[in-house]
Image 1: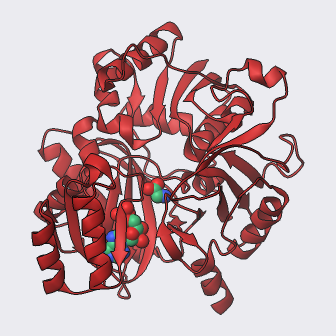
Image 2: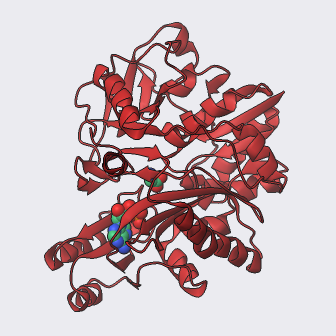
Image 3: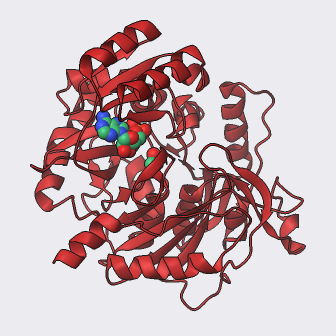
Length: 450
Ligand code: AMP
Ligand code: GLY
């Protein structure tokens, strides 16, 4: 029997833990730090890893100590931050199996400049760009290029450090925010200015074991806060799988022009890529893919609908990945799945804590095979640390962050999945809750047209 540690606290980690818990060979899943949803999941328990200091080395040591003390057979790392600081390298050095890229490979997400230079030198299609640390030089470049134009903070900014400027004035403002006012802290002390790409976005996520590539089902995320794809960029307001824009032909182009070159270039650099790799793509009218960004992890909220469709065991796949023998294909439910993120008051600018959530479905509801509410920013009232003790007291579930829940449904087509997810979402309420009713609209337009 296996014990697994999942690192993270979002909807992605709830979905990963939930999928792993289905495997009969799994005994315990620890989620650090987890959320109210992972605390309630069978076989799962939340743990707080006490670190002796705040450096990444201290944090890595806390993970390693926990794994040694709890006979952990594999670590699955959800978010990018620990990957970028080298949690996988540290675990490997300590003889612990951890699924994810090394710090070197995680630079594909951790530094937009690294990613752009990597793409340029490996002929991976992407938008033309230039990097700046000086505001005046950045503005002069914007004036020369014209609008629309895209401004990005160089470092990690939780999906929010990107401004798609419609006008030159907006672009200048973004430069002032990032370079002059330091709105994104160190992440924004350097900016990348990019050509605006036109087309339809898709998320292309793979598992890679250094050599073999296992593509996950395709998906599409909705990054903007409001309906009609308007408002500020967020970490993602909903997603569905599969993404019809990724036809078989587009799929083959992405594998050949984007994913395989990453695997080959990382091997050539002496740093084999292992773990999840997420290519955020713009597919143009000719069906040609351009990389908007790489992430070194699974997507959130893409994980939720994708794993709702996964019929293979994630534990088997990660085991095979760790042993360098990933299969070329996994088994998927033919039916599409769609997830709607319910966000808290003020998200993405701010987020709320402690608002009581009502209307969550019972965990043993009849429809749990086709509808699942994944938790993200949730906690139990009076207990933000989420000890298991809290459970026995039947504490209320409260908000604890920006993206609170992801209501995910599986159905015969995307419209039905959207309706099923909306029905459950409509029954859930908390002060300031907001969500988009149009998740999946690109695919639904295609469905209606066919
Ligand atoms: P990123 O964090 O780089 O994925 O950017 C967030 C979002 O901004 C993307 O999902 C796109 O919707 C948009 N975006 C980023 N870069 C570009 C680009 N070069 N052209 C058009 N839209 C972009
Ligand atoms: N959903 C976008 C991301 O995971 O970065």
